[in-house]
Amino acid sequence: MLTHKQLRTKALANAEVKAEYEKLTEEFSLLDEFLKARAAQGLTQAQVAEKIGTTQSAVARMESGSGKHSPSLATLSKYADALGCKLEVRLVRLPQQRKIQVAVQA
Image (cartoon, rainbow, N blue to C red; front, side, top):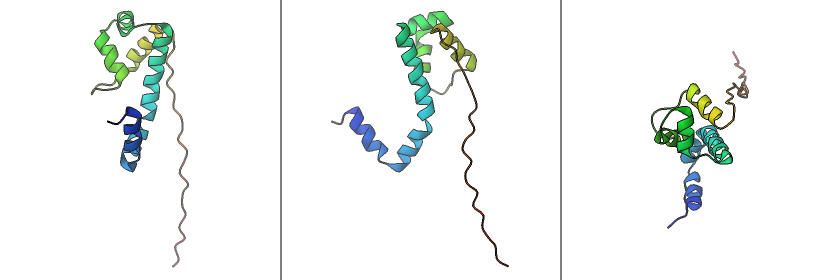
């Protein structure tokens, strides 16, 4: 039986899988920040849920990143506030792709 790490390494060797995984890197990073912040505060999902007026299962779904519904900015802000944090959302300009000029001969 493969370990999680071995399975991940094997899966990411496939170029298509790797491309899809990399699309989710930012989302995974944000979810990891939430989990680390909650752990640093020593709070359970149930305690965070109580602070923001929702259920433990809703917090679990939000932290897992699974499901068909993405939490609103208001919900994410409440979650951050419950952890003594501030949510910041910003736009970051993507690097421009170099434009290739093609000379056309007439």
